[in-house]
Length: 134
Image (tube, rainbow, N blue to C red; front, side, top):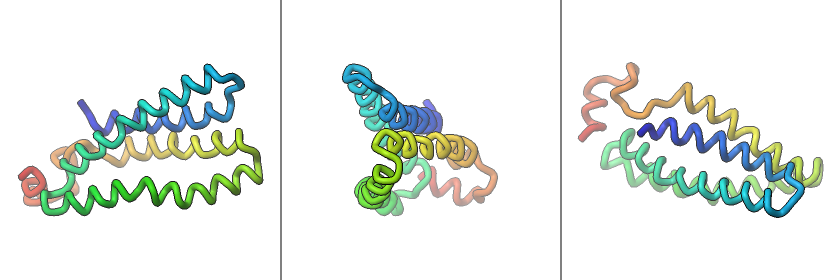
């Protein structure tokens, strides 16, 4: 029941599936990897919405949701440029491998830095924790 744990697992699986896309040599394996990647991606948005509801007050949630939802097209915008460069420099297979690795690294940063709920951290004042629970 931990959003933190779900996102951690999704990041590892996403990075792994992205990297495996560059390694496979047959259509059934590629289809299986892309299916798993789709399932993993489908779990992230609901998990992030729960996370936002835990960490932002009601008045802040719409702005937080906006940034979350804008993250995808903004990432596609700049990663398209990066992907093009990686393909030219290394090849399409290597591009998938290179782009999958940061997700796995970020998963471990996420695990260390993030907690599920404000009540689990010591750096917030009690008044701030109470405001987040309203």
